[in-house]
Length: 161
Image 1 (cartoon, rainbow, N blue to C red):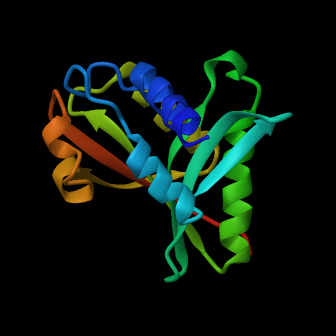
Image 2 (image 1 turned 90 degrees about the vertical axis):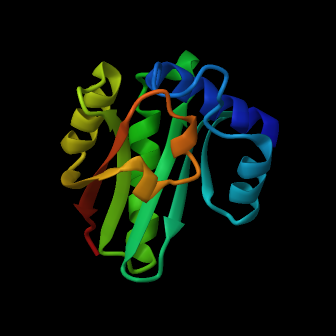
């Protein structure tokens, strides 16, 4: 299952972040995915026994939660799976006492067509941009693998109790 999840994430981000990463660099790897799963950070969407979507979610314990690595199998894209995953982790975070959910959307200084659509999609879900930070600040382990200068658009949503 770890290999399947890793492949799902990498395929999703290979398309959506085209041109951002150095050639041949994968978004995640089996070891990283295994750690996320073992820590209970991955939430899965299933169609029968098949994993068709996943998201990484972390409850920080300070009244906030974070999510990222949202991916849906391209064969079922557009069927509301991503929205259902986000709704689920928002409810779960609120039940754990989080008042705010945070995420980052990567972008270039000149913009990136898919990532701009993604940011707009999050805005429709109630997320607002709160800041922009250089990727080196947010994720220094990923910064050396980027093909272009990257900003992280930090977005927050107030969660209902």
